[in-house]
Length: 331
Ligand code: AQP
Image (tube, rainbow, N blue to C red; front, top):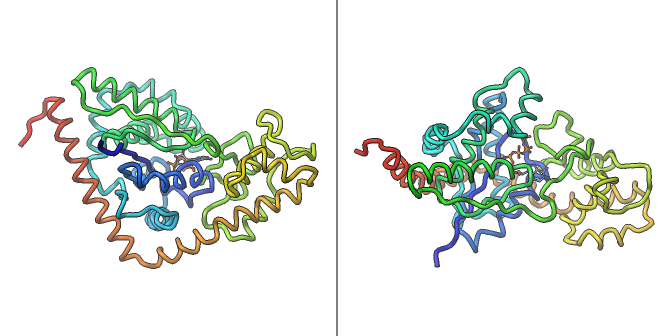
């Protein structure tokens, strides 16, 4: 039987956080043998928020180096930049013709980002989910490993696929999200009501995949918790501590009950230090490997070139089918 297809992407909108890592990239690595995996740098999506061009370019190399350091293998998976495959923008246009503005205006991310970037509420920000739907549908994707924040965008992707198929006959596979049971939503260290985001204005709110051991430990020491002095998982009443327990469990391989047991009777200060040290121990070799790969631009560009070739081949095939279905002349 043919392997199922997996697609996912991260935006080079900042240095990825441990949220991006455990919510998505880490899980991608384990899927490479079982599935045909296609992993992208969502650089076109990143333009929906104002960027400094030179920084965006550098962060794109950084993100690619991180993919490789984390264990993505260009011999097993297609790894490419979205902007190197014009079909992503082409399919977005076609899907726009079956999308209603009201359904985009209702998206939580759109509401959140337009309030955070009130000076730049652009069409791209509104259309973000349609470009994401195009990313996914172009490759006949079966599964999309993402964090919980992207669930709503996956739902609209499914709606658009079904709507297009109903109007023009069966064309797109309707994809399923794969959301991890633990780590689907790592919360901010400064406001545990909010998810951890790489573009947060306050660098103490997130642990980036570039942070030094000292930074990591300092940020965990400052993490907002509560005054109860009891290390117990309770997402309703103890959001900060529950978030730290989740992070500890993800980086130590322990279950949450095992971690609770380990820290029974321990003070918050000691607990936060242990979480920081554990995270730093896991990140340190990945960061070192990322920096090593990053110094070899020629290698990074060869990976992108090879990935773009493979992705363009697949995407072009789908676009021919789509253009035919909607009634455009094929030459
Ligand atoms: N806090 C999180 N916990 C678990 N998973 C997360 N993801 C993001 N934040 C968390 C997952 O990471 C993948 C890539 O996300 P993205 O770069 O496409 O955009 P995003 O979801 O908007 O992530 P950020 O970090 O919040 O970026 P900015 O700050 O630029 O908006 C997705 O699978 C996402 O679910």
